Every structure is written in structure tokens, then in C-alpha cells.
Image (cartoon, one colour):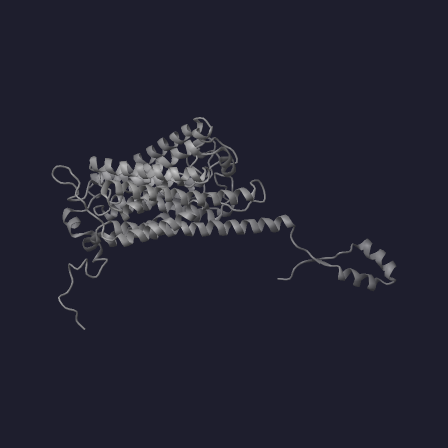
Amino acid sequence: MAEALESFCTGEELTALAGLFKTQAAAQAFCDKLTVVNTPPLADRLAGIEEGVNTFFLTINGALVFIMHAGFAMLCAGAIRSKNTMNILLQTILDAAVSAICWYLIGWGLAYGDITVGNPFVGTTGFAMANWSNLTTNSGSTGRWSDWFFQWAFAATATTIPAGCVAERFNFNAYLAYTVFISAWGWLSAFNTESPLLGSGMIDFAGSAVVHMTGGLAGLMGCIMVGPRLGRFDSNGKPVDMPGHSATLVVLGTVLLWFGWYGFNPGSTLNIVSLAGADSALLFETSGRAACTTTLGGAGGVITALITTFVRHKAWDLISVCNGALVGFVSITGSAAVVEPWAAIIAGIIGSLIFDATCWLWLRLRIDDPLCASPMHGICGMWGVLFAGFFATEKYVGQAYLNGKFGAFMGGGGHLLACQIIGILVISAWICVLTGILFFVLKMFGKLRISPEEEQAGLDVSKHGGSAYNYDHGLNKPDAIKI
């Protein structure tokens, strides 16, 4: 397409030049040499660059978050018995697909659609991406494709977490119903509004509450409603060990999740360049700081888990170390951008101790969570929210949110801590009531749990037509290999 040209000379200037050059033709030739390309104003060009860079930033970080699905798949598969491997892998794939459709039809509109006066709880626009280019979200921005993609990746993560909680005995149809329910209705946004969480002022930078606590508490409700696996507790109520079949897959899943967290937390700045309003340098610093604190939070969890398991069992336990890393990441997610690096280590250390104590308590209460996902995400997600109320600094809150309350231990009084507690109570009530009703109805109609015969045989054989492995740990190995 030819670019528009703009003459350097006006009519009056051309007449004056004709007198100077003696002829009109010479004056015209001179002006033609000075003709310039008519380009858009500089501000418009910079705005286009800003939009392009921010779109790339959000899309690439959304892809990193989606990689966490591979991590969840490997982690869950390795932590359960081999006879149920295909079942949990299929659930992970369907989580992504079903949540995408539900997020498109309903979820995005409820979480990010425009909120009118008197209705600060759910959005009323953006369902099925209707009128997308003219859509105004609850943060005042117009619809961006990359926004939808990035936030879907978060919503899909929340739906994946409970898979580990109810593994090896949950009805497949019930799991599909749950996935629809959570991705469409259960996932709340506490960090992408002008007044986070109904105006309470809660800080949840990357989703300790709205992702991890939501998924973990939903999984806990599922654990309670479906009951423990057959043989998990003996006649005296003491737990019987049911180890997973592959530490290798657990480690692979942990490392993939670790990698994905570098999109999950640093990407939650949502933009990386701003030519108006927020200073781009603040966005760079906030995103980079989130990456740093994420690393240190996970490291604190790893070292703590390594030491505590050795003290208890006199062994360097690999699975415990993997859990420690994930617990550390969950614990720092809500405050990754607003705390000092040393505080991130504290978040991981205390999160690891809380995780161990909760896992012990669950067994005492005969709550069977094969991956301890509800303590990891639900309870440590709560800790991650509270942690911001204690350790958020005034400077970093100002950079991430431009203004706001800060932590009690950092001189901010108890205002932010009170906001965090309100947020925990609201989100916990929302998700526990919704999923509790759903699971109760499914249980009442006998659709929540598989039969004892199917559970004994394993879901792979009884529901999915075979095993994930050729020989199923050698149990079905042929007598001779035919050539």
C-alpha cells in the first residue's frame, strides 16, 4: 500500500519561491525534493508499540502458566497408583478444554465484565465475548484477546488442583460437572478490579486465594464428600500407606510447575510497558521482583521440607522436597510483588511447616487426600494471603498498586491484615458453599463415587479401556517375547 505524501510547500510558499527561482517549474521541483512521507503522529506510533509489547508479554506468560498443566499431569500421575494413571491424565486434558468453553461462555463475563453501581460482585458483560472490541471490563480497559487468554490459563489452573484431592475413587462424570461449575461460576477475581474484593482492599497479586485457595478448598470439599479410598485406613482408623508409583514423574511435574510459576507470578503485572500513567520502570521492577521472590519462596520451602523430614524419619525424602517447593510457591504467590526477598524465604519456611501440620491433621480426621493438594493449595493459599497482611511494604505496594495499605509488621498497622482476613472468609464461604452443594447433590444421586469393584480394578481398566503402561508393573507380563 502506497504511503500518503504531504507537500512541504503551501500555495503561498510556492508562489514566493517561483519569484526566487524565476520559474514556477523550478520552484515546484524544489518543493518536490522536500516532500515528506505523511506518517502517523509519534504518540499513535508509540501507543501501537506499547500495545504490541504488552500483548506479547501477556501471551507468552499465559503460555507459561498453561505449561503448569503438564506439571500437574506428571505430578498427579506419579503420586498415585499406576492403575489410575490414564484417568488422572485424561482429567488434566479435559480441565483445559472444558474450562476454555465455560470461560468463553460465562466465566470471563462474571469475573471481568463491567460491574454496575449496586452490583460489585459479578460482571454483566462479555459473555461469549459479545461485542468484544467495544467491551469495557471492570478495570476500565477495553477487551484484549491476550487478557482473555491469560486469565483463562489461571481459571484452568484452579480447576485442575482438585484432581489430586479426589484421585482414584471419584466418578468421572462428577469430575466433569465440577470442572464446568468452577470454571464458569466458582473462580473469583480479587486482583483485577478498581476496588479489589468488593472494595475491601485485599492484596492477592497472583492468586494465592483466587486460584490456589479456591482449588484447594474445592478439593477438600470433594475429599470430605467422597470419603477415603478403600483400604486407606485400617479398622482402628490408622492410616495405611499408599505410595505413588513414580518418583520420577513427581520430580518432572514439580520442575514443570516451577518453570510455569515464572509466568504465573511475574506475568501478573499484566503489562510491562506503560507510556501514560504508571511508569514502565515500575512495571519492570515489579515483574522482576516477583520472579525473585518466587524463587526464594520455593527455595525456603525446599530446605525446610528437607530438614524436617530428615529429623522425623532420618532420611532425605525426595517427595517431601518436591512438596516443599510447591508449598513455597503457593505461599509467596499472593504477595510476590509487594514483599522483600528475605520475607519470601520466611513465607516458604512457614508454609512448609503449615503444610506438614495440616497433612498430619487430615490423617487424624481421616480425610484422604492422595497428593495433600488441599493442604498445599487450600491452607497454604490462606497463609499466602495472610502473609501479605504482615509483610507487604509501603514502597512495593505503591509500585504494584500505585497506592494502598501495607503490612502490619512493616509499620502499616492492622488495616491490610483485616482486609486479607475478609478476603479469605468471603472466598472460602463462596467456594465451599458452591462446591459443597454440588458434591452433596451428586452424592445424593449416587453419582459421586465409583463402585468398590471399579476402585479395586483401577479406573484405567474399568473406565478407560486399558493401562497406561504395557505391563502394569510386570503383573501382566507375557511368559515369553515373541519375535
